Length: 196
Image (cartoon, rainbow, N blue to C red; front, side, top):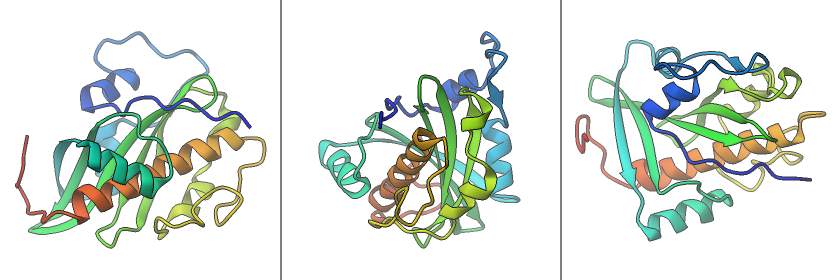
């Protein structure tokens, strides 16, 4: 089985460009841009105040995230979108853009304060549509923690005919959970603290 190559996690501007905004060339006809980053955050955190927080990982943090995720981090820059209801953390969203087979996909993984997956969404998918993970399959990640069962063909059913898509999404989810554990849950987090 060929594994997809990991692309660097993109910041807000780069994700906008990848999703066809900001004057970038239009995506190929087969590409599907399903929602923008702003739309995805609004769906995930209705009525919440969302704060963008960028982390430049130390070597120790990178090693810790990769060891927990059992996946390679594509960049030492991680951006978390922390959502607040009043002073209470409602969760954090991570955006991950990676090559699935030969073309990229962009995924949003939302992690709840209890370190479980709240939701996974596909924002853009440039592979043929038959390889795009359906919402029902993405729902398998809901409520899951980072453990050894969180892999295709273990606790996550493999997508028939879309093995590389299954693997790409699962690695993105594992990296988001590990990043949350190391960067957000492992640190005292207060609303407005550490704003860039």
